[in-house]
Length: 388
Image 1 (cartoon, rainbow, N blue to C red):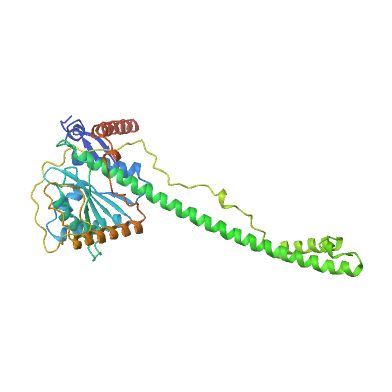
Image 2: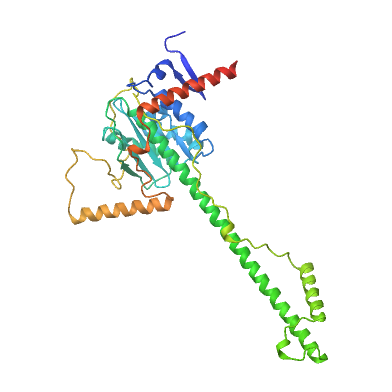
């Protein structure tokens, strides 16, 4: 057996011994582990919701370090069929041996960048966003938005990959659960409208029957008055045999020549349809060490690429940031950006703080490492059992 043998082959995602070792405490997560976990989430956890795409590390590296538009255009043509129905794309970025997460949402036309070491990869992510846009939105001519998000910070130099996995899984779950909730609410609204329509039809039906019945009563009352059956005005609504016969005859004719009456269903009897959370035994992942053999230099963007629009930039804090401008124009510009962001989020059906990820939202790095190691071991045991 070779020193770096294949430990697990899961849906064409290979995990070798060196990759498995990177899941140990203080290990630097490899790109193969990220690809494996991406594949597991896409094929097992979120297989019923194909709206989320976990982009592989190799493809992400090729796009983010592309030197010409021909490279991105070629990749866009290859992935066109895969990208058409995706609304959320999760992209692992590696720059100077550090992992960060770039998220693109089609609904808001915005790139969100999560970096567990302050703004280590921010400039790289901004340049890479222009390249990814050529792949994800080749026909888009209006530009895009870029936002650097406040991110839980690592307190060491090896957990960046685990943070990428944890934040990506949290955002994917949020997006899918929010989509299911909106879909269930829309279905409940449609059902309520249908019930209200049926109730209105039932009331109209009842009024029509009541009007016909009153007409029959009036006619029979007139006949009874002429024959001396009805002797007092206070007995105008007394049911006589002739009135009963006329009423039964009208009801029989209505049954024969009209649609059957609609059953009245009260609105309060509708079953509740809250958004269901995804059934999962997983908690949340965290990262480790990234690629080691990739060049660290990055060519400046060429005229084929354009820098992201400054709109919606911000988030995070750094001691190197310039002092905030307190002028009236600066405050007005910020208010306009915030208002536009709120409008985009409302139009997309997303909560206002949807993209905010805190430490409480994700799993502890050491717990996630242990869980992914256990996952690899369990899948290997299942594969061995099925092969034999």
